Length: 134
Image 1 (spheres, rainbow, N blue to C red):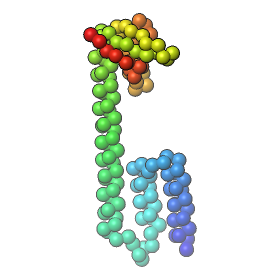
Image 2 (image 1 turned 120 degrees about the vertical axis):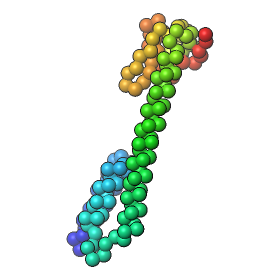
Image 3 (image 1 turned 45 degrees about the vertical axis):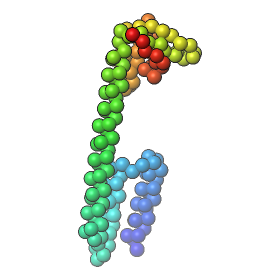
Image 4 (image 1 turned 45 degrees about the horizontal axis):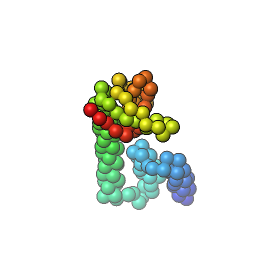
């Protein structure tokens, strides 16, 4: 009887942590799997096929997380390359007031994983660029 109450408590904890993060990460999945193994009935253990399937899911999850990190890194690298390629070029940007400002990009700054361009000492986000000439 005590095993089922622990399982209910663990399920509630898992649901609470899931609602906080809205997704299960690799560590949460492993904690759930270990909790399941610890609280299983020793006379009625989980079959090896189901256990191997769960291990395969953990491996797939880890590979997807690693792939996602690599893709994010690649996208960030492309943004940086795009920003650097604008140095010395004539661009038109839309400022915060909705007005278009035209000028030559003198330098690029990188802060908080975001690239910004500098035109006449004014800093604009790369997403503010509406036209590139020259």
